[in-house]
Length: 234
Image 1: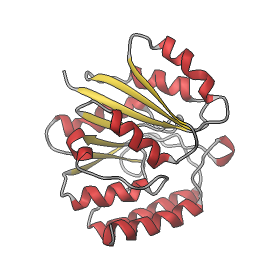
Image 2: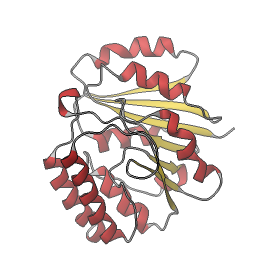
Image 3: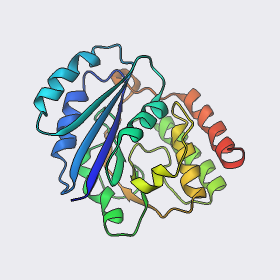
């Protein structure tokens, strides 16, 4: 049976981490699951949860990797990718914004042999979405537009968490970004590699900043720089 590696970067997610791990293992897919948690220097008590999480899922394939200091989402994903043994690798955030119940539609294009990479879009399809943060949505769309213009893709949601890869794709990429610039970097490099990319609609239960959302307009500016850098200079 093929194996699905689910890489979850974790930073200060004590309120949601145990529940998202339960939802990931409960996701309705027939592939064998391997869950890789990469704690990126959490300071809110998240690190005290791992022993209980291991006990709860003792019969599952679960790895916990620790960064001694906060290095960023991209760095955490690199650590997780290096440990992944699956035929397919899926990125899952540690909050509850993205629902693992969407895994079947994310995996379908790869399992059917149509795609090498799948993006889960918050802006297409008929799935439920929480109504929140207009300017955050505008920023996402603008970043996607700039990325598309330089990669000649027609994505609707470049900044989405849900990205799924055949393992072969990741083995052929060198990711440099440590923080949120990971999203435009991986998009530019997948486009440059000529991999087959599909996009499917997903549900989305976004958080506001009071609920723990971390990305800001400063990250948006850095993302624009990353789009240009990884298109022309990397």
